[in-house]
Length: 180
Ligand SMILES: CC(C)(COP(=O)(O)OP(=O)(O)OC[C@H]1O[C@@H](n2cnc3c(N)ncnc32)[C@H](O)[C@@H]1OP(=O)(O)O)[C@@H](O)C(=O)NCCC(=O)NCCS
Image (cartoon, rainbow, N blue to C red; front, side, top):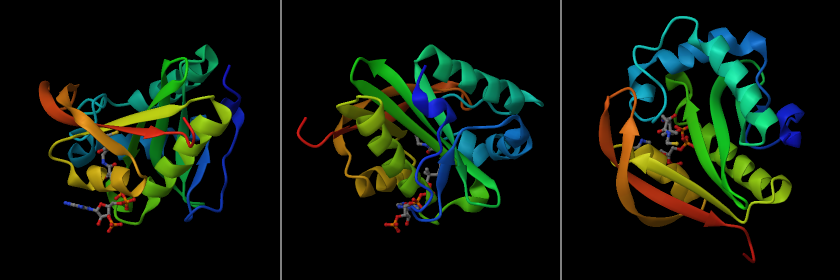
């Protein structure tokens, strides 16, 4: 089991606290995932987002951590849940980073702070020597987030998008641990 399943990360980074999801976060998560603008930028979120899908998603995140296949954190502004950041194990020393933030919370630097914290956590606590990430070609804000986190562009391919129900061109990135 990943130790981070019960951990809360540094709460001093640009107003973003990364903590485990709780059952009580379901209503906020449901609202965040229901928007088309956000769903179309992610690979896994369906649209329309099924009623009561959020409690299942929270339970799946607990199972993900318990199995050692990854870990998901809730972005907590101190007052409300604003988004999600997830690390999925892809190999012994490699994780894939994913993130989403609710429409109401975009443009405040929250995702950049969360991506930086999660990547640092992958290197320091999960034994990763690299973190991968990607974004669809038509999500320039996500490209900017990865640039600000010092990810390096590695190439493009296609990624299925659940909300759009089609393959979409995707740009891929890599961040290596210092000294790796
Ligand atoms: C893309 C997304 C992650 C951005 O989150 P955010 O919290 O607004 O990100 P930040 O505030 O940390 O940074 C956004 C940056 O993008 C820039 N930006 C916003 N819209 C932009 C656009 N249309 N073109 C270029 N840059 C843009 C902002 O100016 C900012 O850069 P700056 O700090 O240099 O000014 C958010 O919109 C989201 O959740 N999208 C859905 C999920 C997703 O795309 N995930 C990626 C795949 S894992």
